[in-house]
Image 1 (spheres, rainbow, N blue to C red):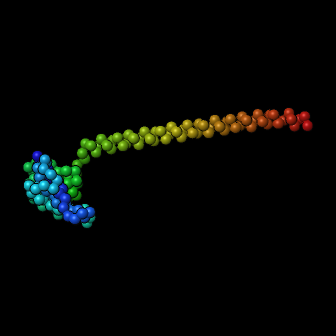
Image 2: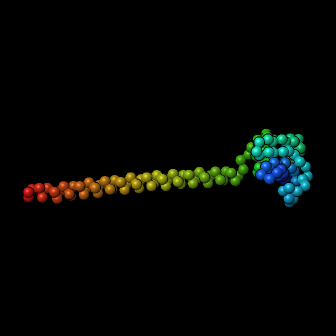
Length: 139
């Protein structure tokens, strides 16, 4: 299977990448079948050979996720939502809903505890007033 992937080159800590078509089993920096473009992540400079990329995609070449993003930004392919993204977003939404429900339940429990504490304080105040009245009557 032919893959469209990035091939690293440049100095240490100053990497640049070439967009290449290569066999999926070959090494990352191995000899490519064809060089299709250039990407510099530091300056965000991108140069793409659009005709050659369209030919390779027409032959069934599969881009990696990073290359797919570059091609979407370059307007060569339509932006698609992959199934993994959809599942991840659904899981995140479910987690947010569960957290919100837990927060509501916790707030309800806290308000119930406050109400019980206020009732207990009122009952204690009433009993202390009742105890204070007979002592005042004796004096």
